[in-house]
Image (cartoon, rainbow, N blue to C red; front, side, top):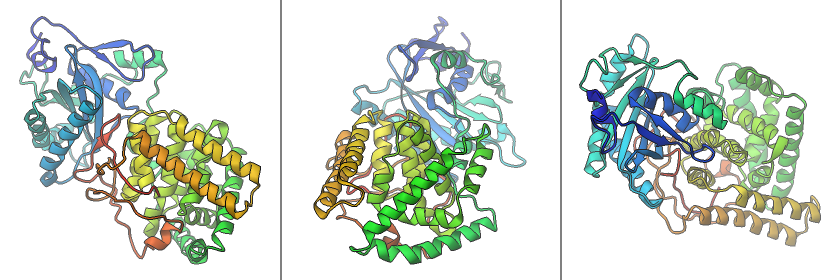
Length: 491
């Protein structure tokens, strides 16, 4: 075994050449996939996350004598070196504490720094620029008595090790990654039916606002008109019921319209076609109407079968229409997109959508609760049962229910959120930062009182929102079970 392998293996992976077997979550019957050295570790990363991470720091926990993969954390690489020390400390603490909550302190950690070169920059330059961050991560993990067995930089189709001093093993110009689909992990994933959904950047692009003008200008103008027409009605006790019914009726018609146009093979072309099927006015009225949490909870009932597929296309399209000053309004459709993805067993897509929802509005507690439930791999069936019960009760009572029935509906919606909080063990907990949130680190949200009005009235956008499109310092969470927080009345 070369010098590199003396660094990468768990406790006894020394000169004997003993490989490091890894058990990867998500495979049926828990097959053991043996990864030998840094190349196979780097090639296995997308299969452990469900996508190719871009501009990301990823920490994977190792457990036991043979280094079984455990908890995972992913966070956007902070752009400022001043943020690297606190982010490294929080990432290490979050991963270790999360693993301990699940019953097993990690025996080691593998670190990945994944970033494409900027214009005029080489992959090797990216590696050198991020070297201090890698060292801070190693130091932070070591301070918790959990060693970093390997730290890799992946950039421009190559990887470098920060731990290996042997230039024969890890040349200065890096080592090329194997072609996609040719690694041992790719073969095991294909056998197990695991699908990698492309790059994180591509997944986020399907959910971020499309700002090309003049369409963005027209959409923002439509949002201004819809807000002026609907917000005061949502706040009115007499009128809000009619607005809710109208919003759901419009959403139902758009779901049916999308169902009449099956998605195209190319995701970008399919999204563009979906956008063309929805007018600016329709999108604006739905976006504003969904700021009311009871309307959003009713929309969440489209969560199963083909209905869920078409609803997910609608929520994505609405998130792409939250342009300009209305970036914060994307939290509602993004949360619905995350919920539908989680309900239909697409956990990687759910985490991305819910992370972007928290980037749009770090205080959107319903997204926090769903994000933690997804990260902790809870069964969404509990929430599905609540929502099915709500729909059945409303169907029995009729579309326009008497006052007593409406109160029961409110109790049912509260039961959904109470069930989520109970399932995630959040009673009385302090909020922990989540990944992919907006600027800064969200703190405890407290327990706000009932909010039956629109979020538009709570904070009417008067200019650009706080969304920066980058990952904040101190906002880590797990792509598996570690992280995610939030407390209080779900919105």
